[in-house]
Image (cartoon, rainbow, N blue to C red; front, top):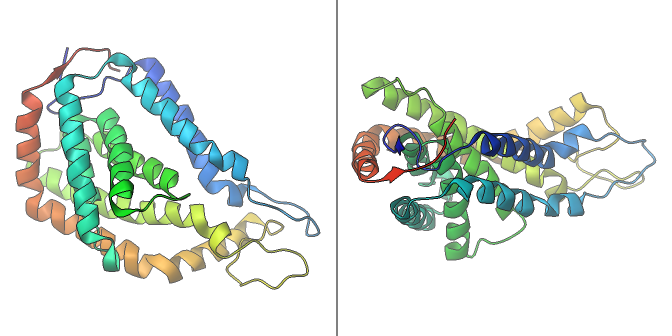
Amino acid sequence: MTRLDGQVAVPLSRRAVVVLALASVGGLMMLVWPLLLRVQPAERVDPPFLFLALLPVVIAVMLAELSQGGLDTRVLAVLGVLSAVIAILRGLSAGTGGVELVFFLLILAGRVFGPGFGFVLGVTSLFASALLTAGVGPWLPFQMLVSAWVGMGAGLLPRRVTGRAEIVMLATYGVFAAYAYGLLMNLSGWPFLLGIVVPGHEQTPLSFDPSAALAENLQRFAAYTLITSTGSFDTGRAITNALAIVIVGPAVLTTLRRAAKRATVVGTTV
């Protein structure tokens, strides 16, 4: 039996950890495929839509494996409430100017309830918010996966850090997560929004060129990211995360830890 407070709400068996790691690597490959591909200049490249369509399957497999150990009904209740709250917060903030009140609560919940819970919450909350805001589209599986990584990462932060140092650590992680989320989401849409360089057709200097070297495509993508989101949406999201964690983080952590003490989970953990 494991305590929720400071430990895990979703039991992680060794097999679950392996599946989660492998599936995360697979999901990451689906995000970074433009940087791994290189063909001859005369060859035409179409995005691997079939490969990308497997992403929802990968997410489903990970969720199924994480729930294999059994979820306490009280854990499910907490998960449902937090998913609903995050969905409402996303609808209220809507990401205008980078002000997005989604990730600070995801980070705090992942911190209290552990990496497995943080992963599941990232998936369910982004899915619920997409339904609430009519934001369902081909980008949704990527948003769910990257948000799941944000919640999981918060649960993997050092447990011995407490007090003010904990708030500083979480705020710093919130800044990092904001830029990482923006970077990965930009990468997922970069070849589709700007197009792929095709021989004989004019494209922008920021477009993905499958015949170019990795360094050149990295420069193209870096310029694209800096222009489109780093100085605006990502920075706004980072500031929002940090301020929210510093201002309301202590109170939210206390509330979540009180809720955590009222539920226990039976299962094998690593």
